Every structure is written in structure tokens, then in C-alpha cells.
Image 1 (cartoon, chains in turn blue, yellow):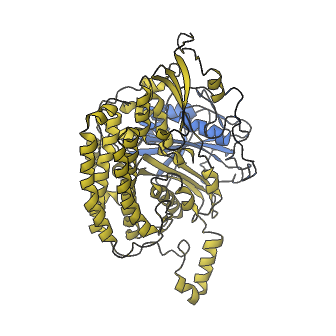
Image 2: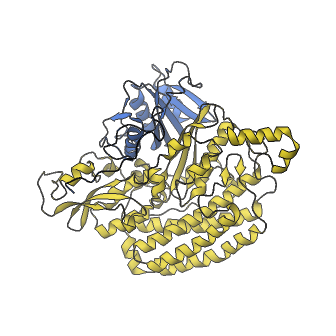
Length: 168
Length: 440
């Protein structure tokens, strides 16, 4: 029995929707069930968070392939987990609305997501509640905007350099 | 490989505990903004007692320090010569390559991703191409698969040789730097012959590879197989048998397997801790299930193990290359699906359809069915992943690269904590981050 089946069963009262595309298991927990789902997956043997990123579906809202009951939103947080013993991957896609782009941080479960969540905040403006160091990572600290959002144009932002502070 | 063998192969060693990397308070990571760090550069308070300590200060290392392999900047909280908390500051090479990827067609994509990890560019091209091909649902000719494997394994050799060179340089073994670059150059010369370029090849493309191997490639590869292994033995004499070199590395920057897993570290860093894990064997892609090789693991997870694992991995890669010499099948080097592969020049003069296909591929690009996919390969630095979303158009809707160096960099503060600043140099070097891939 695969780990994702176990987790899907554990949440029988509020089942987590799932699909399998190209043999890759995908779970679609709601934002409220996100932490609990990741926690039970971790208990099930998914010891490593390989990847965490965001997709902005602003210009492609009617994406197909979402299972029934999943309400598409503008942002999607995509988390990849790996179970070394079973050699299985699972991907979680969490729908995050544009007017409240917040999800809980995975830091306490997977400390390796610290940099990935900072990157997601930096480039997409999705914030992670409970993150220990919620700051920009790739762009300068005083940068305005989140460049990987679809409504940020290419080349529309003048190149900024960190101004040398008088204190230094 | 049967299921039973699999269980034995990864039978967990004692993973240790990962409390150290889970801490929020009292962590080795200096979690503060650059502005705040500059403010208190001369007397940071002790995180536990809250007292100001005279001996304590925040020191800025990099981004242009020679041991930071590019433009890594570190904020180090120092007490005398000892490093306490630290924070890697990255982004100096950030050029928005993921955004660029959304504005290039799938055929142009490899030119972009190849510039991420500039020490092993073929792997980025490979993972992008694999993801695209999975969305397209096309089958590759066998020869293309094997050529990809040959080139990638040679690239791993080149990349690890570069590591041996820079690692030696950082630790004061300057002659090692010259030797490492010399041998790497031999491999790059072969790459130049095959792809036309020493680096940033754009050789592996969706649908196959850009060109067939040139005549006489076997002789060039045999030449490499002849000259590199004896020189690896020389490295062992020069480095492994050298008491000063060992003393600089052994016991420095120790990582437990559980900590590596928790921090999403992969590749030689994870294997050096003794955790037996390699995507080539455990999640076979290309034709790795048809060649024989060993997964090299360390025992203590210190900087010396990370060095030794990489040295032995060069031998294993050469062993794979040797088998590919015999096994490489004939046939086509790219798929003959006319929607993906441009027609040969001669066909364009004869056939209207060929002309149309040629024109469509190079102006608009081929359309990729809607969907999303994640593919991962074992790059010299660990799990290199590509998350690709297509909206049915000729350009990716979202292209995300999971860079192994980006995740591996998170181990730095934990490895450096409580050690001398000279050890910090050895630690950075042993993690072997490529900043082009960290910043993307």
C-alpha cells in the first residue's frame, strides 16, 4: 500500500483529493488541512521535503486536471515530499487565494523548507505563517514587488542596487 | 532489482538525531536582516543571556572572498577566532532565470537552464528536456538516451575534478588546483568537439541531442579513460596521504544523516553521512538500470568524507563511461517526430510540409499539452529537479528548477558553528555550492 493511500484513508471524514499524472501522485489538501496532511505524510515515512515552490495561475485560471471539489485559486503552493524507504514521491498542491496569500510554514516539520519558503515569499509574495526568518532571500531586502507574479512585466522594473548605508 | 534487495540496500543506519537543525531559538543560523546586523556589528548580544560581549562581533565574509566560489556572502557572528551563528546571504547572481524560462519556447529552454549550474550544465539541460518530453509523451530513440548518459557522466567527472581543484586551492594545496583544472580541461576538450562549446552546451534538447557523436569519439573517450584514473591515484598520494590535508578536513563540519535529510540536503553531502542514496540507482532514469556502478558512501559525514566520496565518484563515473563505450546502440540521435524535431536541411527543398514544420518550430515553437510534471536527476551536487507547468502553448507556463546547491547551502551554519574561521573555509569548499544555481 502506498503512503499516499494511507494518508488519504486517515482523513476519511474529510478526504484529501488526489490524482496521479504520469505515475506521479498528487494530493490536493485544502489550506486548513495542509499542515495535518504533511504531518501524517511525514509520520508515514516521507522524511524529506525535496521542493517547495509557487505557481501563479493569474493568466491560466481554468486549468484542467484538478480533481472534483478543488476550487482553483490564483496561487498554488507546490510541495514535493520523498519517502526513501518506499521510493515514492508525492506532490501537494495547495490552493491559495489572491486576497489572502498565506499558508502555514513547514519549518517545524521540515527545516529544509526554510530557504524555499523565503524564496517563495520573495518571488511570489505568498507568506508563510510561523516562519522563523520571514525575509527576502534572492532580491535586496528593500525591493518592492514580487517579480515572478504574472502581472509583473519583464524589464519593467529599473535595476536597483543596494545603496551603501551611511553607517557602514 | 527486486523489492527485497531494495530494502536491504537502504536499511537505515543509525540516523542520529536532528534536534540541532530544528531549533528556532539557539539555532546556528543567524536569523536577522542585513541592516540589523550592520547596526549591531560591534557588540551583538548573547542570544541566551542577553549580555553584550566585548569579544563578540559580526563579521562580513564575501561576496568576493576567494573561498566563497563565486559570490556567496556570509554574516559570521565571531567570538575571537570562533564562528558562532552565521547566515549565508545569496542573490548576487540572481537574474530571474525562471521568469526568463517562461518567455522562451521549449526548444529555447535548454539555452537558459544550462547557464544555471555552470560546472555541470548538461544536467540542467537533461532535467528540463526530460520534463518536457514527459509532457509531450514522446519516446526517445535508444541512442539518444545513451549519448545523454555518456555526456552526463563525463560532465560529472569534469565537475568533481573542478571540486578537487578548488577544494585543494582553498586548503592551501595549490598544486592540486593546477592538476584538477588540467584534467578537467581534457574532458572539456571532448565536450567542445561534440557540442561546439566547452560550457553552456545547449546539447541536450527536448527530443534528443543536438548532434550525433563525431567520428572517432571512441578514441577520445578511451584517451580520457586512460589518462584520468592514474592521475586520480596521484591525487590520493598528494592529498589522502598528506597529514596536513587530512588534519584540515577530518572531523570538520560533521553532519548526521537525520540532519541532512531534515535540511533537504542531497548528493555527496547526504552520502558522506553514510546514507545510501543515489537517484541513478534508486529512481532510475535514462538507462542507468542497465549499467553497473557503486553508490559511494562515507562514514562520519565530515569534510573529508565529502571530499573522498567525490573522488571515488569520479572512478565510478568513468566505470559507467567504459560500459557505455560497449553498449552504445546505433540508430537515431533524436526523435523523428516532425512536430518536435526540425527536418533536415535537404528535406526543406523537397517538401512543403518540411518547410512548414521548420518554420513553425523556429517561429512559434511546438505546443506542449497542458499539464504539470516534476522530474529529478542526480547531478554532481545532488537532486536536480525541474517542475514544469504547461498551459498548452509553446512556452512553459512555469519553469522551476530545484537546485541542489540552494538546499545544500542551508547546512553551512550548522557545519560551521563553534569551529575556527579557517574551518569555515574548508566547510564552504566541501559543500561545493555553485552560485549560478543557487541564485538562478
